[in-house]
Length: 106
Image 1 (cartoon, rainbow, N blue to C red):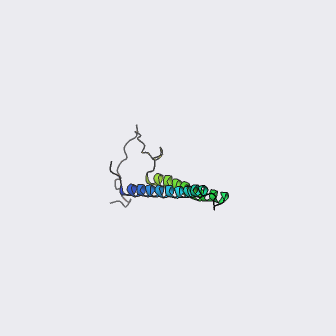
Image 2 (cartoon, one colour):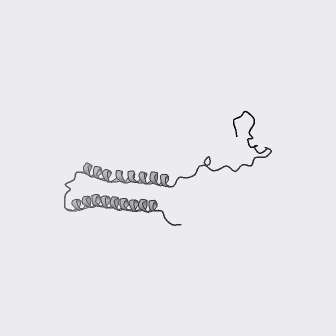
Image 3 (cartoon, rainbow, N blue to C red):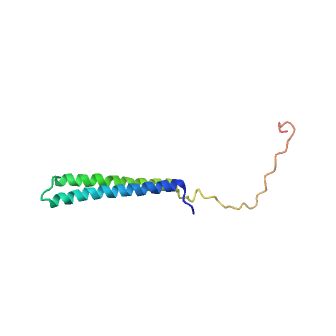
């Protein structure tokens, strides 16, 4: 099954965002570790929590966006949208309209 152009762009975007989020989280956590080993941190403890939150919140938002986009691109057919396969028994076929005098049909 060949991948569509829209799917390819979607997955390139997903991979790019994942790499960016990993780099951001790694940078935040590495900065904290390197400052702690130098004998003291210039970043106070509550500020570090805010930095981590600012790195994780966009990752969660991108995850939600990923799910919403995937569902929009590949909708799941519902039971009500499926074509009904019913067999009608005991009904006569409709008769074609025949022109009657005065009906205006020609």
